[in-house]
Length: 222
Length: 231
Image (cartoon, rainbow over the protein chains, first blue to last red):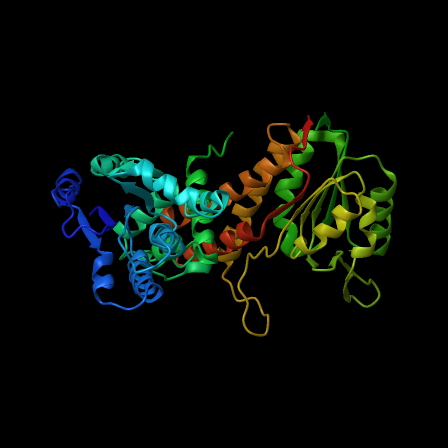
């Protein structure tokens, strides 16, 4: 099943049905999970506290498998006097996603894309903001009216690490064979989580998958 | 770097459990003929001779088949005629001797030879292929071998086949040394998987595969990349 995590301040996602129906796998509609910052804003508290609660939830959910995570650039008014701090919450969300999940494809989108990009870059040091965007490995900025089609297109062009994560999740009940000493007996679900985190284990799993894959292609008589 | 391969010096420790590698040296001899010079470490005189050859002769590649530790390559075994006692010379080369590899390429198939690699490179070796563990048996808590004949024989045969194929690629100029090391890794992976799949009647098949993968995991290339010799 395809899985999409959307962080957006709309009450109901206008593109929810498109994502579900256009991304069926074996007749199963995609799982679209919507995190709405307004839930945390309505809980009250100062801006830092509201954002912390939002980021905690984003971080927790990001540990799961996602094909695509899409984040609205305008996530609402978090109560900051300095309006720039409101507009950069989307970057903090993107960074939080990436801290917990290195495999999902990540998009930022907006109905007024040019305005928000200009807003983000004009405040503070623009090179710092750009660096944050690159480090969060944001794949693209997308117009809101094109986000559903972009997400659907991205599903068919997964990165190498997302491909590995997806396959391990699909086979999550399988276990590593006894002869592979480093990961003997561990479930593929466990490996998928490590791949997603890209911690030491996750990097090693990717290294082994690459090695085993290339070995399978190697003509030993060459 | 591509140069004509002038000569290979192979240092082979005389030890029963290393005799399975004779198939490798036989193949190298067939390919390289007089350019493949084997020196067998058996007694102290042979050790001295081998050291002298390593110091004095013009060669490009040194190949070691020996036991070893993180600080040394062990010599061979010899028997004192008068007493019949088997003597095992502990250290054929130590870290302090690695200057003899200046300008040379080294393939060192001995346990923990990776620990010697950086010192060899610091002493001027062009490249050093090292290993961590090269297991072809299992041991109990007192270090007594407990693996079955099948386990040992099959592990050794596959390991020898893999090393033979990889060294052959390198000395015939079909691959660079770093590529040949990767080829050795892939060979061991493929054979390990095939062995488990194709030998269901062998109860130790998973252990055999595990030993091969341990060797693969400890196989490392050190030094400059892209070294290739013309045959």
